[in-house]
Image (cartoon, rainbow, N blue to C red; front, side):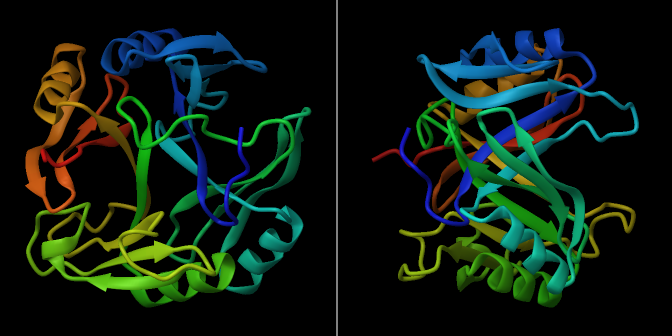
Amino acid sequence: MAAFAQSAPCWVDVQLPDLEAGKRFYGELFGWTFRAGDGPYADALNGGALVAALAAKQDGRMPTAWGVYFATDDITASVARIREHGGQVITDPVRAGLSGVLAQAADPGGAVFGLWQAAERKGFQKQNEPGSFCWTEVHTRQKDKVDAFYEEVFGFRSTELDGSGDPGTHEAGLEFRMWSPAGTEPGPDTAVGGRSVITDAFPAEMPSYFLTYFAVADCDASAEAVRRLGGRVTEPPFDIPYGRMAVVQDDQGAVFAVLQEPVS
Protein backbone atom coordinates (compact mmCIF):
# COMPACT_ATOMS: atom_id res chain seq x y z
CA MET A 1 0.00 0.00 0.00
CA ALA A 2 1.32 3.42 -0.90
CA ALA A 3 1.51 6.09 1.77
CA PHE A 4 -1.15 8.81 1.72
CA ALA A 5 -0.43 12.50 1.35
CA GLN A 6 -0.51 14.48 4.58
CA SER A 7 -4.15 15.34 5.48
CA ALA A 8 -5.69 13.24 2.68
CA PRO A 9 -8.70 11.07 3.60
CA CYS A 10 -7.20 7.59 4.01
CA TRP A 11 -9.90 5.43 5.65
CA VAL A 12 -13.60 5.16 6.47
CA ASP A 13 -15.54 2.92 8.80
CA VAL A 14 -19.12 2.65 10.02
CA GLN A 15 -20.43 1.99 13.54
CA LEU A 16 -23.45 -0.33 13.43
CA PRO A 17 -25.75 -1.97 16.01
CA ASP A 18 -25.75 -5.24 14.04
CA LEU A 19 -22.46 -6.13 12.37
CA GLU A 20 -23.77 -9.21 10.56
CA ALA A 21 -26.71 -7.27 9.12
CA GLY A 22 -24.23 -4.65 7.92
CA LYS A 23 -22.21 -7.30 6.11
CA ARG A 24 -25.31 -8.50 4.31
CA PHE A 25 -26.36 -4.98 3.29
CA TYR A 26 -23.01 -3.71 2.04
CA GLY A 27 -22.00 -7.07 0.61
CA GLU A 28 -25.08 -7.01 -1.60
CA LEU A 29 -24.92 -3.29 -2.41
CA PHE A 30 -21.21 -2.93 -3.22
CA GLY A 31 -20.12 -6.53 -3.73
CA TRP A 32 -17.89 -6.32 -0.67
CA THR A 33 -16.44 -9.37 1.01
CA PHE A 34 -15.30 -9.36 4.61
CA ARG A 35 -12.56 -10.66 6.84
CA ALA A 36 -12.34 -10.52 10.60
CA GLY A 37 -10.44 -7.60 12.08
CA ASP A 38 -9.40 -6.91 15.66
CA GLY A 39 -12.37 -7.38 18.03
CA PRO A 40 -15.89 -6.64 16.73
CA TYR A 41 -14.50 -5.19 13.49
CA ALA A 42 -14.75 -6.47 9.92
CA ASP A 43 -12.51 -5.31 7.08
CA ALA A 44 -14.39 -4.76 3.82
CA LEU A 45 -12.71 -5.73 0.56
CA ASN A 46 -13.59 -5.04 -3.05
CA GLY A 47 -11.84 -7.30 -5.53
CA GLY A 48 -9.51 -8.33 -2.71
CA ALA A 49 -8.50 -4.73 -1.91
CA LEU A 50 -9.23 -3.03 1.41
CA VAL A 51 -11.87 -0.30 0.99
CA ALA A 52 -13.55 0.26 4.41
CA ALA A 53 -14.48 -1.43 7.67
CA LEU A 54 -17.64 -2.22 9.62
CA ALA A 55 -17.62 -2.11 13.42
CA ALA A 56 -20.14 -3.30 16.00
CA LYS A 57 -21.09 -0.43 18.32
CA GLN A 58 -19.84 -1.01 21.84
CA ASP A 59 -22.10 1.67 23.30
CA GLY A 60 -25.71 2.17 22.21
CA ARG A 61 -25.34 5.92 22.72
CA MET A 62 -22.83 6.13 19.86
CA PRO A 63 -24.27 7.33 16.54
CA THR A 64 -24.88 4.86 13.74
CA ALA A 65 -22.69 6.67 11.25
CA TRP A 66 -19.85 6.54 8.75
CA GLY A 67 -16.62 8.15 9.93
CA VAL A 68 -13.67 9.42 7.90
CA TYR A 69 -9.97 9.44 8.88
CA PHE A 70 -7.34 11.90 7.65
CA ALA A 71 -3.71 10.88 7.25
CA THR A 72 -1.07 12.43 9.47
CA ASP A 73 2.62 11.70 9.88
CA ASP A 74 2.63 13.19 13.39
CA ILE A 75 -0.60 12.52 15.24
CA THR A 76 0.61 14.19 18.44
CA ALA A 77 1.23 17.45 16.58
CA SER A 78 -2.12 17.16 14.77
CA VAL A 79 -3.97 16.72 18.06
CA ALA A 80 -2.19 19.76 19.49
CA ARG A 81 -3.24 21.87 16.47
CA ILE A 82 -6.85 20.69 16.85
CA ARG A 83 -6.93 21.94 20.44
CA GLU A 84 -5.12 25.15 19.56
CA HIS A 85 -7.60 26.06 16.83
CA GLY A 86 -10.86 25.47 18.64
CA GLY A 87 -11.51 21.77 18.03
CA GLN A 88 -12.18 19.08 20.60
CA VAL A 89 -10.18 15.89 21.02
CA ILE A 90 -12.62 13.06 21.72
CA THR A 91 -10.10 10.20 21.83
CA ASP A 92 -6.44 10.88 22.46
CA PRO A 93 -3.99 8.99 20.24
CA VAL A 94 -4.19 5.24 20.81
CA ARG A 95 -2.20 2.50 19.12
CA ALA A 96 -4.15 0.02 17.01
CA GLY A 97 -1.78 -2.91 17.28
CA LEU A 98 0.83 -2.90 14.53
CA SER A 99 -1.53 -1.13 12.11
CA GLY A 100 -0.99 2.46 13.28
CA VAL A 101 -2.19 5.10 15.72
CA LEU A 102 -5.63 6.70 15.69
CA ALA A 103 -7.41 9.60 17.36
CA GLN A 104 -10.88 11.10 17.10
CA ALA A 105 -11.78 14.77 17.22
CA ALA A 106 -14.50 17.29 16.43
CA ASP A 107 -14.18 20.59 14.60
CA PRO A 108 -15.52 23.87 16.10
CA GLY A 109 -18.94 23.13 14.59
CA GLY A 110 -19.11 19.69 16.19
CA ALA A 111 -18.47 17.46 13.14
CA VAL A 112 -16.52 14.35 14.15
CA PHE A 113 -13.56 12.96 12.20
CA GLY A 114 -10.59 10.70 12.78
CA LEU A 115 -6.82 10.93 12.41
CA TRP A 116 -4.64 8.03 11.29
CA GLN A 117 -0.87 7.77 11.59
CA ALA A 118 -0.03 4.71 9.55
CA ALA A 119 2.34 1.90 10.43
CA GLU A 120 1.64 -1.44 8.71
CA ARG A 121 -1.79 -0.33 7.47
CA LYS A 122 -1.66 2.74 5.25
CA GLY A 123 -5.40 3.00 4.46
CA PHE A 124 -7.46 2.34 1.34
CA GLN A 125 -6.01 -0.09 -1.18
CA LYS A 126 -8.59 1.06 -3.72
CA GLN A 127 -10.54 4.31 -4.12
CA ASN A 128 -12.35 6.28 -6.83
CA GLU A 129 -13.53 3.03 -8.41
CA PRO A 130 -17.01 1.46 -8.14
CA GLY A 131 -17.49 -0.02 -4.68
CA SER A 132 -14.89 2.19 -2.99
CA PHE A 133 -14.53 5.60 -1.31
CA CYS A 134 -14.40 8.62 -3.62
CA TRP A 135 -15.16 11.82 -1.64
CA THR A 136 -15.94 13.34 1.75
CA GLU A 137 -17.32 16.70 2.85
CA VAL A 138 -18.25 18.34 6.12
CA HIS A 139 -21.69 19.93 6.48
CA THR A 140 -21.72 22.76 9.01
CA ARG A 141 -23.53 25.90 10.17
CA GLN A 142 -20.33 27.57 11.43
CA LYS A 143 -18.71 28.21 8.08
CA ASP A 144 -16.13 30.83 9.04
CA LYS A 145 -14.81 29.03 12.13
CA VAL A 146 -14.75 25.68 10.36
CA ASP A 147 -12.99 27.03 7.26
CA ALA A 148 -10.21 28.55 9.36
CA PHE A 149 -9.94 25.35 11.42
CA TYR A 150 -9.31 23.00 8.49
CA GLU A 151 -6.87 25.39 6.86
CA GLU A 152 -4.85 25.73 10.08
CA VAL A 153 -5.03 22.11 11.25
CA PHE A 154 -4.63 20.30 7.92
CA GLY A 155 -3.07 22.98 5.74
CA PHE A 156 -5.82 22.74 3.16
CA ARG A 157 -5.88 25.25 0.31
CA SER A 158 -9.38 26.11 -0.79
CA THR A 159 -11.45 26.71 -3.90
CA GLU A 160 -14.82 28.41 -3.51
CA LEU A 161 -17.73 27.19 -5.63
CA ASP A 162 -21.32 28.31 -5.90
CA GLY A 163 -24.20 25.83 -5.90
CA SER A 164 -23.74 25.08 -9.58
CA GLY A 165 -20.40 23.42 -8.88
CA ASP A 166 -21.07 21.77 -5.52
CA PRO A 167 -20.47 18.01 -5.70
CA GLY A 168 -22.70 17.50 -2.67
CA THR A 169 -25.85 19.47 -3.45
CA HIS A 170 -28.15 20.43 -6.25
CA GLU A 171 -29.43 23.44 -4.34
CA ALA A 172 -28.66 26.56 -6.36
CA GLY A 173 -26.55 29.24 -4.68
CA LEU A 174 -25.41 27.09 -1.75
CA GLU A 175 -21.86 27.95 -0.74
CA PHE A 176 -19.33 25.17 -1.14
CA ARG A 177 -15.58 24.99 -0.60
CA MET A 178 -13.19 22.36 -1.98
CA TRP A 179 -10.05 21.37 -0.07
CA SER A 180 -6.72 20.64 -1.75
CA PRO A 181 -3.68 19.43 0.21
CA ALA A 182 -0.84 21.79 1.06
CA GLY A 183 1.71 22.03 -1.74
CA THR A 184 -0.83 21.52 -4.53
CA GLU A 185 -2.54 23.98 -6.82
CA PRO A 186 -6.07 24.31 -5.37
CA GLY A 187 -8.90 23.27 -7.65
CA PRO A 188 -11.14 20.34 -8.61
CA ASP A 189 -8.22 18.30 -9.99
CA THR A 190 -6.41 18.21 -6.63
CA ALA A 191 -9.37 18.38 -4.23
CA VAL A 192 -9.66 15.63 -1.60
CA GLY A 193 -12.77 16.87 0.24
CA GLY A 194 -14.88 19.88 0.95
CA ARG A 195 -17.20 21.95 3.11
CA SER A 196 -20.91 22.53 2.58
CA VAL A 197 -23.27 24.75 4.59
CA ILE A 198 -26.32 23.53 6.51
CA THR A 199 -28.96 26.14 5.73
CA ASP A 200 -32.04 27.21 7.69
CA ALA A 201 -34.05 24.88 5.45
CA PHE A 202 -32.91 22.03 7.72
CA PRO A 203 -34.08 21.45 11.32
CA ALA A 204 -32.11 23.40 13.91
CA GLU A 205 -31.31 20.19 15.79
CA MET A 206 -29.45 18.69 12.80
CA PRO A 207 -25.80 18.44 13.91
CA SER A 208 -22.73 19.06 11.80
CA TYR A 209 -21.48 15.91 10.10
CA PHE A 210 -19.19 14.41 7.47
CA LEU A 211 -20.83 12.80 4.44
CA THR A 212 -18.94 9.88 2.90
CA TYR A 213 -19.31 9.13 -0.81
CA PHE A 214 -18.81 5.79 -2.55
CA ALA A 215 -18.28 5.45 -6.30
CA VAL A 216 -20.82 3.30 -8.16
CA ALA A 217 -21.24 2.24 -11.78
CA ASP A 218 -24.97 3.09 -11.85
CA CYS A 219 -26.43 5.60 -9.38
CA ASP A 220 -30.07 4.81 -10.12
CA ALA A 221 -29.56 1.06 -9.80
CA SER A 222 -27.67 1.58 -6.52
CA ALA A 223 -30.51 3.70 -5.10
CA GLU A 224 -33.00 0.99 -6.04
CA ALA A 225 -30.77 -1.62 -4.40
CA VAL A 226 -30.67 0.42 -1.20
CA ARG A 227 -34.48 0.38 -1.10
CA ARG A 228 -34.63 -3.33 -1.87
CA LEU A 229 -32.19 -4.08 0.93
CA GLY A 230 -34.28 -2.19 3.51
CA GLY A 231 -32.52 1.18 3.42
CA ARG A 232 -33.89 4.60 2.47
CA VAL A 233 -33.17 7.07 -0.30
CA THR A 234 -33.18 10.52 1.31
CA GLU A 235 -32.13 12.44 -1.84
CA PRO A 236 -33.11 10.60 -5.04
CA PRO A 237 -30.59 10.47 -7.89
CA PHE A 238 -29.80 13.81 -9.51
CA ASP A 239 -27.18 15.13 -11.91
CA ILE A 240 -24.28 17.34 -10.86
CA PRO A 241 -21.21 18.53 -12.78
CA TYR A 242 -19.25 15.57 -11.37
CA GLY A 243 -21.72 12.84 -12.36
CA ARG A 244 -24.93 11.54 -10.86
CA MET A 245 -25.43 11.12 -7.12
CA ALA A 246 -27.91 10.15 -4.41
CA VAL A 247 -27.92 10.38 -0.62
CA VAL A 248 -29.10 7.23 1.13
CA GLN A 249 -29.30 5.43 4.47
CA ASP A 250 -28.47 1.80 5.11
CA ASP A 251 -30.97 -0.49 6.83
CA GLN A 252 -29.62 0.56 10.25
CA GLY A 253 -29.69 4.33 9.64
CA ALA A 254 -26.12 5.19 8.60
CA VAL A 255 -26.14 7.94 5.95
CA PHE A 256 -23.82 7.96 2.94
CA ALA A 257 -23.82 9.04 -0.70
CA VAL A 258 -23.27 7.20 -3.98
CA LEU A 259 -21.70 8.89 -7.00
CA GLN A 260 -21.58 7.73 -10.61
CA GLU A 261 -18.94 9.28 -12.87
CA PRO A 262 -20.23 11.37 -15.79
CA VAL A 263 -21.00 9.39 -18.90
CA SER A 264 -18.40 10.33 -21.51
